[in-house]
Picture: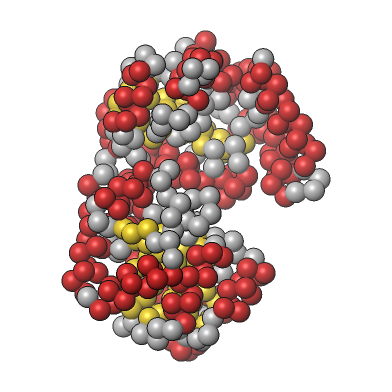
Length: 406
């Protein structure tokens, strides 16, 4: 009852916020049409495999598995749902799925209506998706449901003395494919034993991204023979540190791909620069070669841009947490980030593998970059370690495919 009340109140809050905020408004518009969309697009005699991702990051984790199923079992259709507008709005035209839509809020009536129309033959929930009513109903209907790339920590509610209801939700899964041994141990302590450690499908995904990376002629022209520092998904506290270093080191070029791309933030970045810059949207062969800083003011390029850097910096570490480190590490470059990284297993393991460093101050960043620019052997060693960490952890998708009965 408490869970259902919480979902009900969340639904009300989203409705209330919709007139005043873009994301809640997008979500509500998506929810209003979801059942009609399903009725129009569901093929009656087709068998649908349902993938659910909270947002864009979880989608990227599930994508290798979706595409593997698509390639090996083309007789199945793929239904892909998102909770967040930041996932749906970016991937609503994803061609790897037959239907893409929002997931209606986890209220009993919504659940029965959604499953009654979609009729999936199996379901995959990516990482942290544990919607009680959906999972309970899937279990009641004997529809196999799997958790993919999930990871568990001892401080989660499942392992608290008052977490009995949430532990029951985990029992709805036919199988959990977890990222590490610690997760399996924690689950074993609460008698959840249908578990295998397969790793994280994100490693498979970033290897795909690397192999499909775009050749960016203007970025190549900008780079030339220079030592390039690529800062991805940066926020203001990150920028304060690395722009200060860039301004006083003319032997280094800088590419900034900020997390928030709006005019106010871009103007703020530009105000800090003391060396020539150009925005990617205004770059030409002529002006890009004369610039020392390239500002990426559009989406969709960052994962291809990391390969042009000698060092990559991942933003968010001076806030709630760092962004995707693997997209940079896959190119075999050293990875740097701020101090808030301890909830991200891949960041911890990258540091342990001597492929990444966490910095807290300007002086720490300066010391590392000074050494990397002066010592090519050190630079290559750290980069090689980062790249090997990614390739050596690939293969989760195949392990999952081998264990599921299609």
